[in-house]
Image (cartoon, rainbow, N blue to C red; front, top):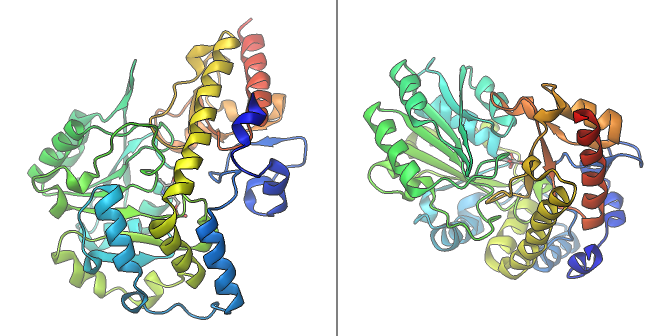
Amino acid sequence: MSDARYADFDWDVARSRARGTKRWSVYGPDVLDLTVAEMDLPIAPPIATALADAVRRETVGYPVPAPLSGLPEIAAEWLSGTHGLAAEAGEIRLLPELMRGITHSIRLFTPAGSPVVVPTPTYRSFFGAVELADRAAVEVPMLREDDGYRLDLDAIDAELGRGARTVLLCHPANPVGRVFTPRELTELAELVERHGARVISDEIHAPLRYGTPFTPYAAVGGTARNHSVTLFSATKAWNIPGLRCGFLALTNPADHAKWAKLPGAATGGISPLGMLGSAAAFGHGADWLRQALRFLSGNRALLGELFTAAGLPELYTAPEATYLAWLDLRALGVADPAAVVLEKTGVATTPGPDHGRGGDGFVRLNFATAPDVLEDAVTRIAKLVATGRA
Ligand SMILES: Cc1ncc(COP(=O)(O)O)c(C=O)c1O
């Protein structure tokens, strides 16, 4: 079964290991490392061709200035079409990585000293990005209900009432896999506007969905477009994070002059290969992405089958987006089960508590790998939980 599901791609984990990236380099051969959010899939042929051509031409000098590159036009077209947020090339800014976009946006667009609301559990690097902006992060745990997580709008309202002026949204949400609904986002937009606050929406995972419709935060209507900035990138969905190129859409025209004042050192470091790889992804990567989503969708279902077969279906809820599973290991009775799981089973997962409040008792598991690796990992974890409970 697992081989058939991997057969669409001419690939195996040995080739991922041979890449020599962080993905399979941190632990020895006996550990199944399911931490780093990188996929065990070959990159899209149009990206591989663009990169090979760039190396042949030695396009490894300083990158051409963004306005001369044609990339803002390509990114704006993808954003307006596939992603669903109407934007002009003149609203797109380039960055080497998205976390810098968060730090600069907090500093430039929100009042000095005002705290930043972070709905949790969330992408753990958000906390560092807020800290680099010299701001306090106010963690507001999402509400965990039978059908998944949702934003605690009352608690966010209360924190904005106490002086916070930014909401840092991960939409779709890493690690919990939620795609927020237009209704939820509209309600958020209304209260953010009422408090004169801003939203920074990191939408890097949006292409990695399993049928759930997606509305970009800035597209929910009303004033959302004016009080938000949107981060997006080809690096996550097309598996090219090492190429260093990300994007910011500044949909409030008043933000443009503030962004222009940033020194070059604040936004520099974009790689010319990243620019070419992103252009190939946005312009010609749709077929590969469809194929990758078929593969990921198979793994997403497989996890459900495996946990159900092990008699532990409550450990796993299939995510609406991302290739990350947020496993509920509270049955083990420890705040940080990742350490126990690694020690007792040799499966490395990302610790739940790293993702902020609401993360205790959980781990994050990357399922963008070979199905037999997942089968092995789930068998080991299920055995541990079953024993721990006995
Ligand atoms: C929500 C989110 N934003 C950003 C990133 C990383 O983006 P970059 O490497 O461009 O900073 C990740 C990586 O997993 C992520 O999950």
